[in-house]
Structure formats: structure tokens, C-alpha cells
Length: 148
Image (cartoon, rainbow, N blue to C red; front, side):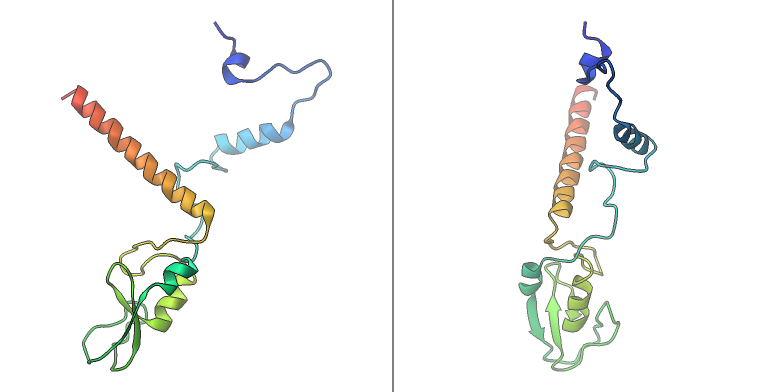
């Protein structure tokens, strides 16, 4: 049977060797939830701006007739000949409003549909979160098939 150190992939300190105190501090921070270096939690800050390519590919419209519809960002009505952009989720915004919004975050302000970003860390986080949800669903399906 393996001892504790072998099980954890660690080794005992050699004679005269000092422990790495930074590792102890890191372990302390992780144990008390002050630092999280995994993808099980939430993104630690606001989502990053939408990718330049995604913003460039948004459909552009010129309002051709008066309507009662408002821009969900500025809440002003669309007027004749206003420039508007449509998100992939089919929501329509004034061009200036949505471009300003997407410079700050990657999601639709109305329904939170997310556009891709240029931030590799955030994209990895989204993929890992999706994989974790899929694993959870797979485990639930397996559990229900065994115990139902």
C-alpha cells in the first residue's frame, strides 16, 4: 500500500531542505476560497468585450419606416433613416448604442446572448463550464438509468 507522500505525488524533505512557504500560502488561499484556479466557479470579473470580428459581422439596417419599437439600451424610439444593428439573437439596437455596449461586454443587453470574445482565458472558461454541465447531465442520466 502506498504511503501518503506517494499517493499525493510528493516527497519528504531532504536533510537541510526548507519547505516552500509560497506553496503553503497558495494552499491556504485555495482552502479558504480566497483564490480559485479552477473552472467550477464563476468568471471572476465582468465578461470581456466582444471580438472585433463578431462586432464587424453584425447585420446592419437602416430604419425604413416609423415604428413604436425602442432601442433596449437608450430606450429611445427608432426613427426613419436611423442606423441599427441586429444581434444574432434578433434584437435590434441603435448602431452607436450597441457598439458602445459591445466594447464593454460580449452579451446582448436584452437577453444575455453571448458573442465570441478575443480573450482566450474567457473562451476556455466557457468551454470548461459547458463541459462540466455536460458531465453533470451525463452523470444524472447514468444515475437515473441505474436507479429508476
